[in-house]
Image 1 (spheres, rainbow, N blue to C red):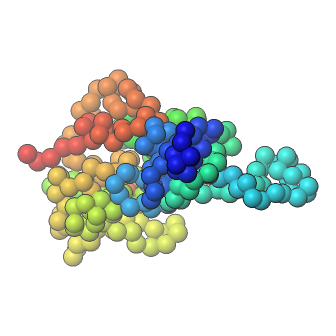
Image 2 (image 1 turned 180 degrees about the horizontal axis):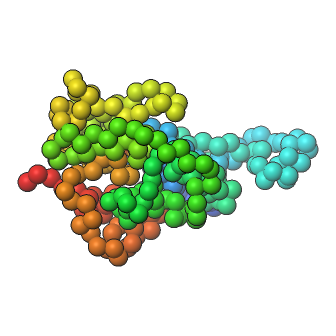
Image 3 (image 1 turned 45 degrees about the horizontal axis):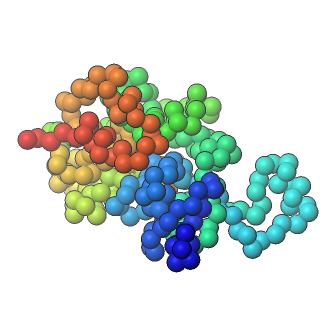
Length: 270
Ligand code: SF4
Ligand code: FES
């Protein structure tokens, strides 16, 4: 590798990866075919940094830990000399040594995924997104066998007012992909998040607060980008047979699955 190329190189799990100036660690990893688990990231939309599934550790070579730190490190398997960052928001900087696919990080990611499952009503056997759902696929990828925590069983409003799109807030993971897609791509600003903490919820920017009174159309990216079964096109559920759904045929770690999922779940009025 030339000296110039070295200047634009990061290392992920020991693999050297070239990056372009301005790319995040996530951008560089995906471009090199390296999977970093993620739910709120979509290439082309502004990074959001909310799901924390893409948490990686960056080795800081300049920090040397004390002997007592070392004891903590050994006891709790914590790497004192590294810091945890979101790969989707952290710029790639030459020389970074990044840990991604480690048992410790994947265990934390599994816990985050379990929390997402129990906070909503993700009852996969009765959800038409099953097999095409990124949350479900990430849970399989991380070896999640149960929810671990007590279920919340929320009762949030379902909006079925629109003639061809429905919104089930009980399955919303607040990734804001629909918010960003509507604002940045569709130019409509149909969705937003209101409330804080456990009361945070997706709202519709229309006079009545209903989808029917919004400008949302089935051709909009916001109508198709939801990684779970919260925003669905009506009257197309269960069209793909078991065995041919996205994650029957693909691993969630395959790069560029967006187009595959879209081909199976995109429906327009035409
Ligand atoms: S409706 Fe879907 S895309 Fe929108 S914030 Fe909720 S989970 Fe994300
Ligand atoms: S992908 Fe969600 S925080 Fe990075």
